[in-house]
Length: 334
Image (tube, rainbow, N blue to C red; front, top):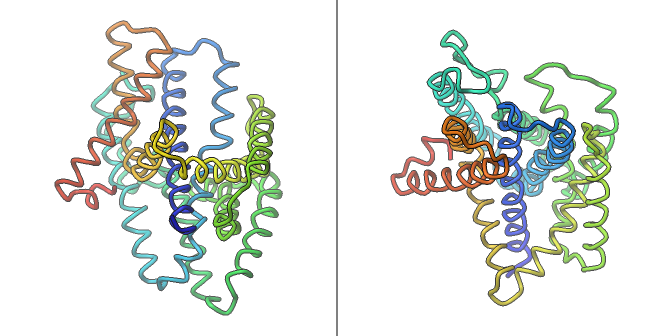
């Protein structure tokens, strides 16, 4: 396998882990909202640990190959792609989610009425903020690259991205952006820039010793979150260490004969490739199942979490497969 394809497979498998955390994180918050988690301290401990890592990871992964994308396509084509791949899914699924929540009535954690309908879904509706924030991050870079373009070599772009990521992350707490439209982008831009900065380094083979040190650093920094919202610089360090450790794991596992580790890695890669449909639809399945389980008297929180996690992954994957067969993927934003 070439270095380029290995890098792509590592991105896919990392997305697989990330999307599992997204589904679990929303299942965890959904259970809290439904008053199924009596221990507030435990809720915060798990919640802040997940949110210190999983969404920053997706912005980081989105940046890894973005400089190559900028070099390959013109600005007009790229901007059209952002409209169809990010804005259309955000709009469509905002309307779908609202309709489903309206039909759920008082069974929903946050009931809505028809007058709340998001005709123009800005600020972004619920978890779809990620698509809007990523759209802004990418659009800013597309326009900037169109102005400066090839005047700067790729290495210079990566160094600029690295310096900007660190400075932006460090200054982020000092520059609050309360707007729901601009705030999420402003907070998560450093991770996207960091992905651009280290994109070329993702081709290297991380030795086991360095991978192990990265893994230890990742665990320590994640443990230090301790039920508090992590600073952007803290989360940035967590993501970079996680990526270093995962490059080592993915490549060493991927070179082994067929076994349980390789099958697990292939499953993660498949989930990563299906991450968009899972991201868009997982709350439909997991929230619906949670509501039904509570209605029929299930109160075992472990059973509810496991069931909502499984259905939140499997349900969208099945829908995505069906949409592909019917050639509806683009229409549905997948």
